[in-house]
Length: 262
Image (cartoon, rainbow, N blue to C red; front, side, top):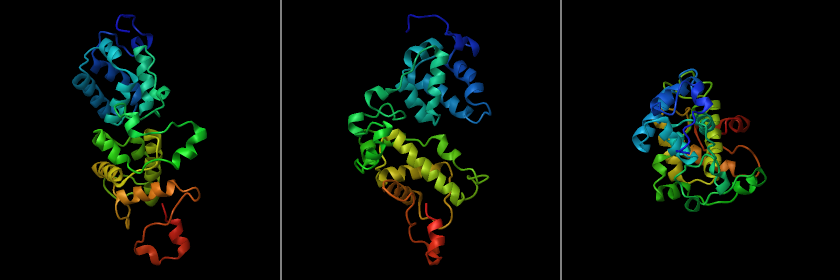
């Protein structure tokens, strides 16, 4: 790949060449990936990571260095949608292949060892079996290989908040609360191939939510407890919701309490 100096057509279309800098490359992609400017800061962080961590300065070097695993790890670290990796590949004129051929679900942090994480494959016909088997120590396993601190919630978790005008200033609504928990549940399954988590993992996610100023609705104890409840519920064969933990609203009519469960 390094020997091929042919200028990719898509690269030319965005106004770059193999001699362009890595930062110019990312800037040229912003109109396609961040049309409203929403992700510009994160894309800037991606460019800095490429230069400072990968040690690449030109597009040619980016193309030689950036395997799918490099991009997947970088996108996870900077909070960018991993679906954009294909766009990066097209612009560079290379095929960035996911590691699913190795039995690892797309979205798993690239540096996480499949053997150590003991993840499962995700063909649709075995999702049910995958949901109900596994070890309840995801946080401890990630911590053991030095990956827990690097876990970041993707933007889609925060995009699930649609009713609260500004979740960084006030508590989110109950519907937003349920939507966030559901997105966390689905993201964890897609990323790590399991819905079995431990309190360590839940507390890490709680820190991520608090860091992003996502405030719980009233009468909710803590994000970590709610996350653990949601995962316990998600492993049940029946009923999409479970009874909420006791709160001051416990004296309400049972039908009202049921409607308020996550």
